[in-house]
Image 1: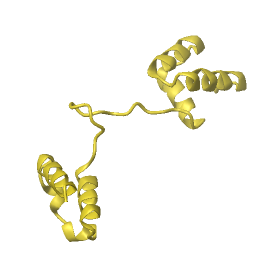
Image 2 (image 1 turned 135 degrees about the vertical axis):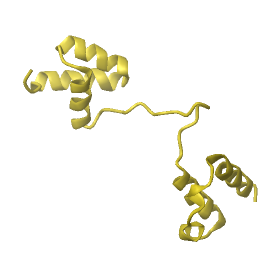
Image 3 (image 1 turned 60 degrees about the vertical axis):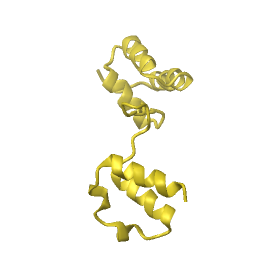
Length: 104
């Protein structure tokens, strides 16, 4: 199928922004006879697509070990480069250290 008409684009934006969810993407795909990927791509190009946020098994937003080390450095008031190599530690150890220094 060719590119989206202005009317299709407006409809996609209106429908999706009213309820930004994968369900709305599926509805738009069926209504317009396009793939979900096509709808997502169009919404992304229009700047309205919101990627579903990933959560860990424990229901938390993910944080990388590099981000954890950066947060630890900020909490201690030191430059992050002074903790070089700490990001190779197990995530649970970094989490425990982060929580412990948060108590200071």
